[in-house]
Amino acid sequence: MTIKNILVVDDSKTELMYLTDLLGKNGFSVKTAENAEDAFRRLAEEKPDLILMDVVMPGQNGFQLTRSITRDPLYSDIPIIMCTSKNQETDRVWGLRQGARDYITKPVNAQELMSKINALG
Image (cartoon, rainbow, N blue to C red; front, side, top):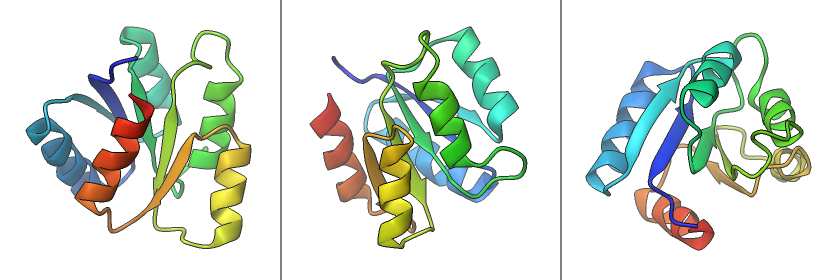
């Protein structure tokens, strides 16, 4: 599967701008969402090829949202990379248990992120 369209879910405007800019410069089309409700609205509009998911957000957190998406038959085939400041091994393991395909910590290293995306593509 070729990854072209990426949905970035993060409640930080700074992170959204940074990741949108970074991904855009690498040829990806990016949509953003700031919470779970936004994310599901975006999913309904256009199914992305990949989701970058923050963990710490108001309302439903990224772990819960990842679980909801990966258990939904409509969206279960979309790979999710957790993209979070939570850098404990237990967080990584928990994120992968919720259905995420990979886990990257903030501040995001551009090369690391690109190699993780390319590994999925």
